[in-house]
Image (cartoon, rainbow, N blue to C red):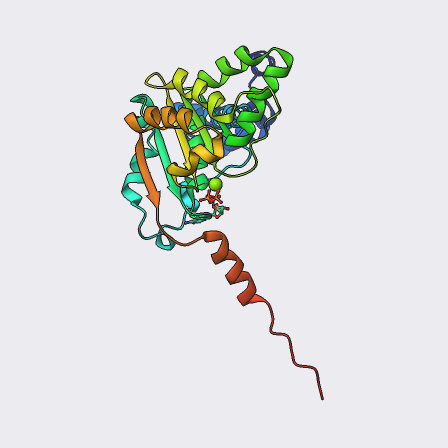
Amino acid sequence: MRRHLDFLGLTLTLDELDERLAWATRERPGATVLLEHVLGLEAARKLEDRIARRVHVSGLVERKALEAFDWNFQPKLDKALILELARLDFVRRRDDLVITGKTGTGKSHILKAFGLRACEQGVRMRYARCVDLLDDLHAGLADGSYARRLKAWAAPALLIIDDVGLGQVKKRGDEPTAAHTLYNLIDRRHSKVSTAVTSNIALSDWGRFLGDATLTAAILDRLAMHAIRIDIDGPSYRQHVAAERAGQRPAVSPPSA
Ligand SMILES: Nc1ncnc2c1ncn2[C@@H]1O[C@H](COP(=O)(O)OP(=O)(O)OP(=O)(O)O)[C@@H](O)[C@H]1O
Ligand SMILES: [Mg+2]
């Protein structure tokens, strides 16, 4: 049996074999229960490993879950809509999604949670902050890998472009503007695969951020055509956490006379 398990690559079952056999001798489970008990553990481990690999290659640096989202803190947000979107049917419909709102309102948290769901469901997904995505493509101009990189970003069933409007879009002399680069990508993806974007600046300010008003209008025209739009109008969770921390700090006692 040990040889079989080793050959089949069932390493966890192999490690746990003695314990499982002792359990079976003790509890005398039926054949189905025994098989379920033994195979279930290995299957769960393999699934978790697979999800971890997908998370790693997707560029998602942290795992955020909707289970950790405090809905009461953001009462104007339509919880039912977010939970419905989290099923990722919009990805299968090739719809785009644009979430806007002030800083700290949970936009990135929600899209990162969608990204994690995609990894769990085996939906091909890539995640990047807008500035990092642009940097990657512009690096391709320098070393001749632009076309390959553009193709790679254009391919995933779901591309999450986080934080449009945050950070500095770097531009060296002869490089195309960020708007030009983003336009090329969005135009390739439009109607074929789904793109989800967050931004804490108004869409009307994207032109200034991306450096070209006409091309930005073309990007927004494409995104707006199919996009599901959500605007989170509410307080910043970061400020809430900071205020709570400040409240917890022990009061400074006045100097003694
Ligand atoms: N309602 C919430 N419940 C629990 N955690 C939240 C909630 N909203 C935000 N957070 C947490 O607060 C932090 C900031 O949220 P997030 O990064 O999603 O904000 P954002 O809207 O993307 O802001 P920015 O526009 O600055 O990028 C994160 O750690 C996030 O997990
Ligand atoms: Mg954000």
